[in-house]
Image (cartoon, rainbow over all chains, first blue to last red; front, side, top):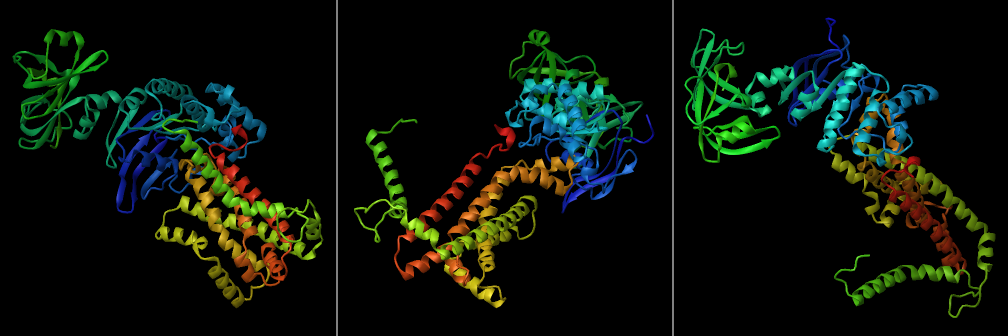
Length: 364
Length: 270
């Protein structure tokens, strides 16, 4: 890997009047990676993508593409094609004319244009629709036209703004596979903006999680899932149990946090290294590390909770519980184990986990 | 047609009502049309017999040809100028947000709400002051003012149906702003642009009051008709009326057809 990443955001921020859409941020995007930017609506993910595309100008900082500052380069002079949430296909052009569009704008001759467009039509398996109007295609076919139209110039980077959000669940999964394979085969950089955790985590090499114009965490999907760095991320992922409390003791490679639900122990991680007794801290434990039992286990962290409901999620089920202080808690279990436990709403049950399963974040 | 909860008498009643409405609107025009082919000097029943004399007389009248020439020059020029202005105004509204935008829109759409006599008088006073009254160009200026809001309204409606990211998508694919205008905005608006051309031409073609004030010696056809009426009642007026009506209707119907095939349009739509 070269020292300079393909894209660098250097203190890049964007304001609209008094509203801060993106706080000054640092972000590096490497050549050939699949990067997902995830967050709920209004978190600044789309603005970030649009700044990279040249559709919004940053109000501060510098964006570099292959080492060159591109802040002032208009979008039509960048080769940063985007696949739009609405797809934005040109309704007055045929499928082939749509795909040829950017070649035509760049003054490529008619014969070459057609040949290059046809190559992409074939690759995206839409050759048979070449002369049709885009209005007469299905959702998945339109999706492929949009991809072919963006890729026809063979760019180094492709930007995708929630392109799958209009598809039904079944087609979504199929298009995810198409996108993943395409990115691997082409070896170009994909920057994919989405609010969907399943899309981001199943396709991306690295995920950026944003909230209120700030980057909360950047990392590989597993890393983010296993060790969320902020309370926001832990709650956003939705699969963690989160306890707010105070540090009771931090010594000898371990840390103990006192919360309304009990005092829990975890290894002293890098994030919690600076914490002193009395500081606000958040204790996080993922729902698949939770044990459920009828009686209090002899060692480890434990608390007694009330069963609220069971939720079926395919191969496993999630049990929703309420802690002693009213905390919303969850545990992911196999159906076999749940059958042995015979839980029903209102039952009291012990939740427990080993110290190595939890981790502690600074702040309440 | 669905017929739930509808009794036959009500159904027939409504049809008769519709028929009467059309009759009320079109009877005078139809009468004018019928009498234009009648051989009699005065419009009275029973009809005297079929004849094309009045058409021959109209065709032989140089004053009519002069009026028609003025009307056509004005109509064509007005339609092009008003549509260009209307397009610009509609695109400004589509593309930009700025302080005072609602005021801008209100002002841009205002002219058709001003009574034509007032507009005509004001135009005459204004154009006379700056030395532009009494010519065909005066009619053109006044009609552009009257017609541009229609063009703007039609094109604005079309733009409101456009996916807002379409233009940005063109920029993103390598089209500069002017190129995107030519390759995306104008093709998308093409049916509305033609509709606006036809409608504004029809408005200009029919317009009487303002033309009467500002045209001076270069009278348009509707103004000529008044001149004829003041001199003598002649069936020639029926002939001119029929011609003007058919021309306007053709333009309006063409515009309507263009506006109806709104969804995709273009050559690939079929």
